Image 1 (cartoon, helix red, strand yellow):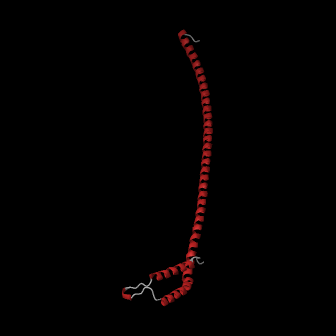
Image 2: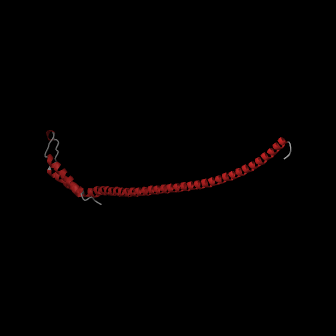
Length: 176
């Protein structure tokens, strides 16, 4: 793919070279021994040879070089486009990953709260059951103490009556 400006560039370069050659005029250096502008027939021959070399040099050198440069620019642009697409895909993947992590953390937090609530419920249930058992045990112990108290009272009453009879019998000196 040749550059559309290649021919124009060559024409500008040739025109600049011609202008520089003609502008120099007939400058002569030391005592006429150095001549910067060749004589017109030689100049015309050089210009014709230059013009004849432009086409082969353009086809053999400039066009391949410009084609390689154009291909390189196209590859660079294609690589930039692919890099931008890959970057967008990477950003989307990162967003999906961060969303998944966020969702997973939220689910884990919900599960933790549910388990904590469940554990608290079990603790309250276990505590209530233990409290009920303790209260029942205390009630049984109270009944046991009450029964023991009543039995001890009756035993003491019987003993006190027996001691009172013995004391009365000693005081009276006779059995009652």
